[in-house]
Image (cartoon, rainbow, N blue to C red; front, side, top):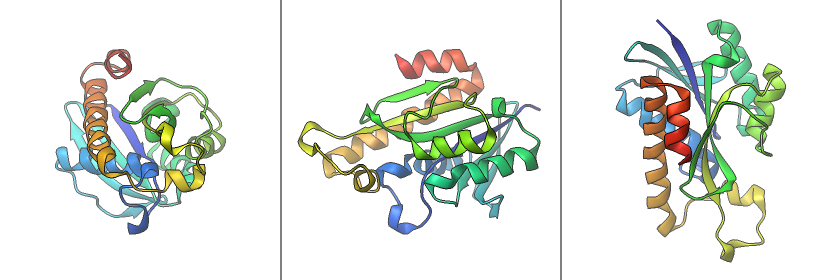
Length: 190
């Protein structure tokens, strides 16, 4: 049975719930609910859920290390589960993409995202798939303090857009599992 580790990036704790930087957690919470796979405790500095989808055995992970240290959790999970970077998909926010935009890539740089920086440094490669969800500020929010912006909650009109991007992200993940990464990229990046 093929295996996939899907990691949602965010910060633990109620203070950060539904903030921009926690879109990765939000996607994984909704995916776990859709797959009827409850969160079953912590291991390797992550909250984990095990699910099956078609022929896939899935391990869903939300690192509990805070965003900037996500790599500590990911490297431990890869070692413990005997997986490689090819077996992972990281879901995270992206301040460079417009709000609601979803982009799937096979590999690449961190784009300045500290969670991705941490993973790349910890596992020694940027050759892993990532699904980014846009949170770029509107023109009326410029200039802005990035560290404050990413941990802020969505404004009233933005909540519905963010919620729709979470639904699209789940569709992209399931298409990737049903078909392949290239078809999912075509759908996500269109």
